[in-house]
Amino acid sequence: MPTMFRRVHPLIAFAFFVVAAIVLAALGPREKSLGANVRLVYLHGAWVWTALVGFSAAAAAGLVGIAGRRPAWQRTSVALGQAAALFWVTYLPMSLLVMQANWNGLFLEEPRFRIGLDFAIVAALLQAGILILRRPDWASALNLLFLAGLAFSLSSSREVMHPSSPIVQSGRVLLQAYFLLLTLTCLAAGWQLTRWLRRFAP
Image (cartoon, rainbow, N blue to C red; front, side, top):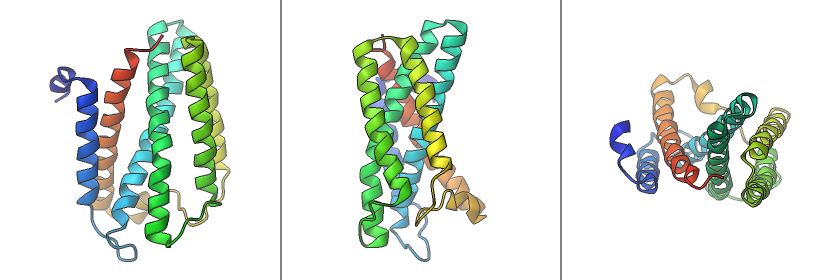
């Protein structure tokens, strides 16, 4: 499978995995209180985790690139950060859909949503600055700082109508396996986007 997708244009492979994730989410199991609306939550959660893993990978690649003075790793950090930022920014509209579908309204002061919005703005500005500066070493350092700030904010935020990991805490093995598959599909989409973006990294 990996060899097959190396022969396909990264954007085509990205679109394939995004569609696969949407189909998986639509086929997800219903939940007693949320009903079919929980499928939006599944996709929303997997999308967020893809962004978080992407930011973490960008920081790790940047650290290796800076410590070992390896430009290739620094360029990978740039591409990973850009892909993660795209997933992070696009998860916000999903949050609004989830709120409307499950809470019958928009609770824009919800702490996790506020953090998501604030860091989406920061991520967009940061990636714009990285593109302008065209300095992969600086980009690697900025990706490290961004991850540190995001991790601190998430760990210190209050959970209001937004449990941190309900699927992990559910104890339902089949549901956890399903969500893992959905998340891996989103991660595959993120990696294909990273492959394409890396072509343009300075």
